[in-house]
Image 1 (tube, one colour):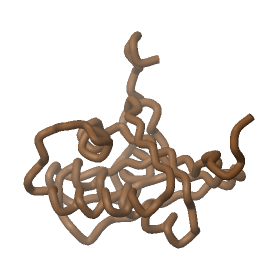
Image 2: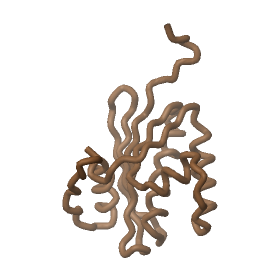
Image 3: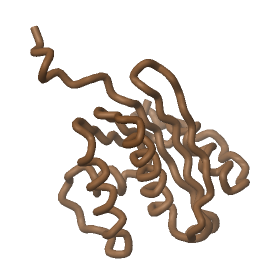
Length: 153
């Protein structure tokens, strides 16, 4: 029987994405985040900055983390289709992206402000709603649906 004091609370589920048009260019961020009780929320905004798609994805994650701090969230399960973001923040030993190093440090600090966090890479076709929100923030039409490869399910 699990110890109720040390058991991880049910997590908030987050899907985040970012777009840059052109790349680099104007950035839009999008996210879908769901409370442990099932209540869904969305975020779709254009930033007042220009940058690359990696920066847009990172800013999308940071915007959601800042929002969840105000909602007293403690446990997070974050899904992202950007492997660079997941590698940089997930603890893998990878060469840092110098231009984004300060933003990655800010994101790490935000992640550490929660009791339990897990970052998980997902294929693009499983992140469609967050992608659509990021693109909508910039007025970009939706991408055609990605077709999953046989090994990505």
